[in-house]
Amino acid sequence: MSTPASLPTDPADPMPGITDSGTVTDRLVEANQQYAAGFTDPGMDARPVLKVAVVACMDARLDLHDALGLELGDCHTIRNAGGVVTDDVIRSLTISQRALGTRSVVLIHHTGCGLLTLTEDFRHELEDEVGQRPAWAVEAFRDVDQDVRQSMQRVRTSPFLLHREDVRGFVFDVKTGLLREIDAA
Image 1 (tube, rainbow, N blue to C red):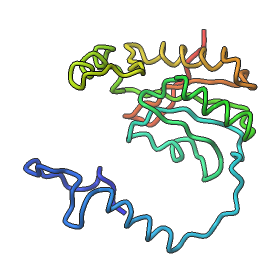
Image 2: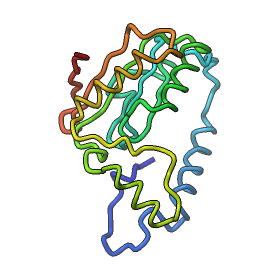
Image 3: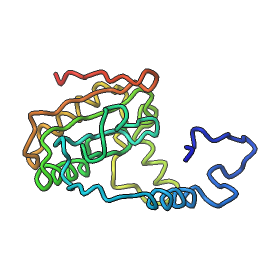
């Protein structure tokens, strides 16, 4: 299946994502049908083989499994805008550790993140537009390294997590594909 990054783009196309055969979602469902036709249950448990949870940004340029040499079943992957450790990430990590046996946490932010260009004003703009302020914080940041440190600190101080000693943070360079480790101090 070709990816949106490899599809030719037509600047005159008023509805990118809509194809002759329907929507992008239709295309994904068709791809799933092809996938399922050759699918064999791998017989895996829900517990990650490597006992690691990776928290990363949702950015489409990050192919975490490829970048980290991971196979299906190796890890839990938790993604959100910025790869920021929020209450919901702590929820997922708590379930990952307490119910499914993970012991290590890897945090991955990246260069060129969209959250570097937003502020909390985004919430106010949404409130002006729809008449209700979101309950969630944007979690925008100006310094990606410092935000990785803050995310590591949030994991290391959460009373809900059993395993807080093996928490490491990185910045993924979207131009080179390399990880740069961030010192927690």
